[in-house]
Length: 155
Image (cartoon, rainbow, N blue to C red; front, side, top):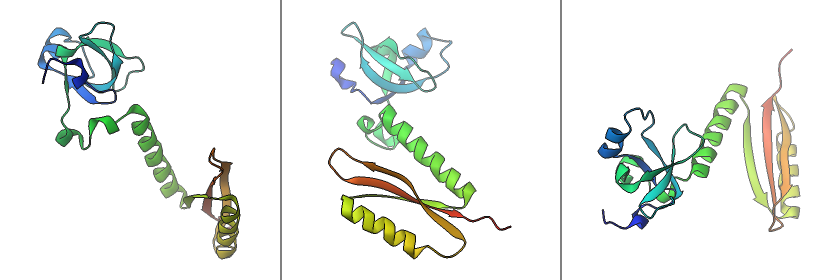
């Protein structure tokens, strides 16, 4: 690693180096995400996993987690990406529990209406109820909507 502070890109995953662990023996979390530069030229702001506020650390106290260990480029592991992925996983688990499924489409207005009508007509019969769960217009004029099929309880 060179002595340049720009080795640490915002969004990169990092962990406490041996010097950081030695200087902070009570540190419970040792991995986190770089969220910005610190006040001095040699410090960075790190948001450790499980914490809500970032801390400033000298760059010698942290080291980047390599791509091979982390499973992807560090710049793609932003906190927002992690939040989106956990939300997706939660929705998948919830769907498995409910026994239904969701499909999300992004189409122009007329095509969105036709697609929604096609799905409602196609699945009109059977043991499932089909609903339009969410429908919103995006800034580019396209319509994003989610169709959901739910099992009808047997009485």
